[in-house]
Image 1 (cartoon, rainbow, N blue to C red):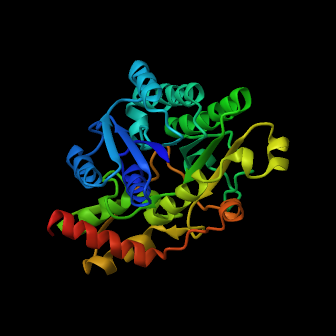
Image 2 (cartoon, one colour):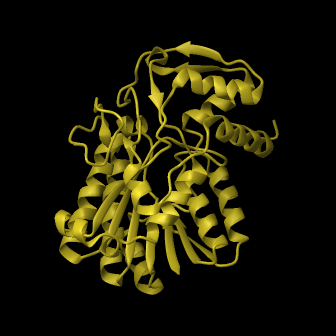
Length: 330
């Protein structure tokens, strides 16, 4: 298949493109290579991808309407896996316009490109952050998500509504994936697994928010990619006609998470065990936009694909720490 992966130099985009290329697909990757975090890390990911047959890269900002339009017109993609966007909850407090441009304008451009070029299936990244401070756990796709507490979460919920609208109006098959705290080799430097590992190995203190009274459904990258690859083979119109009729549009949402939340202090202990170094912990208050817990109900994903994420935390953290030591020579 001819597949577009946006955000191909990003963490999840890189692993997804790698998997698709290894499966024999023709993959076009795009990324704007912004400096939200280390561009060198993004370029190192791209270097790995460019060595693969079937992979082509274009430096492109999806918020650039003309460039995005030309890409879709020239390439004729069969499927699109949209993983580009401005990530990060706390960054959205100080840089709101970056989220409007990348996550809203950029997503409209992707939807329009898919609509006008006859894309068979659009799979796009949503986020567990859409659940906000919901008290009912585990979080299920049927739960109300009307109270986002960060602009990042609001843009992701907006993406889900926009996709549903295009599915309804133009019969564009869309599937949104709500990712839960993804970690693993080649991970993002702005996320806790990377930040904690780096600080612990350098003998620097780490901030434990909400005095440690937080839990996250940490999900290993290989499990996330497996979910993406399986879902992209299940366009909504052909999966369950009765459900399609009930929803009124070929649009679906799925959680992708381990389904087993871990307290933040227990997660730190996993890193301590993998590194052999004890962390210097600083307990701090809850940060604006943060939520106390995440916990994925993945029963819908399991029903649709037969797959349920299962990489144990200790195993996944060990792989990440091994990669970090190798990549950074520590």
